[in-house]
Image 1: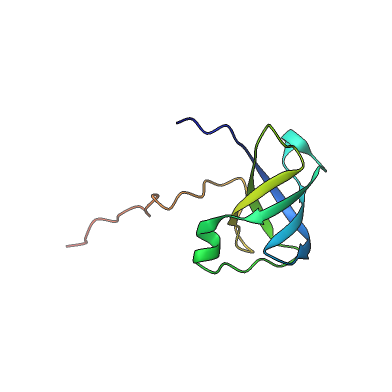
Image 2: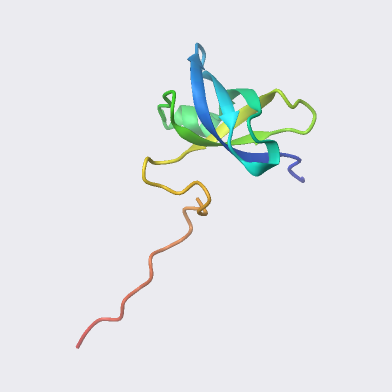
Length: 97
């Protein structure tokens, strides 16, 4: 099954009830576009808290360009352009003998 989604980076502007947020896109694909986004299920299960001003990664479907889904919240010191996969492991240093 192919995923027909557009991944973007944005900043949360406003918080609404029911885990819904107004997000302003900062990615080059849709610069300054505002979306109404809800939290992805995995973020709800892990109780990730989102506040206005947080940088987030979101998915947008090409069928509805006004709605999206927040799939990741960047840390304050994390670069949004860096890969976010958890499969990356730090380099292993050989034991000194």
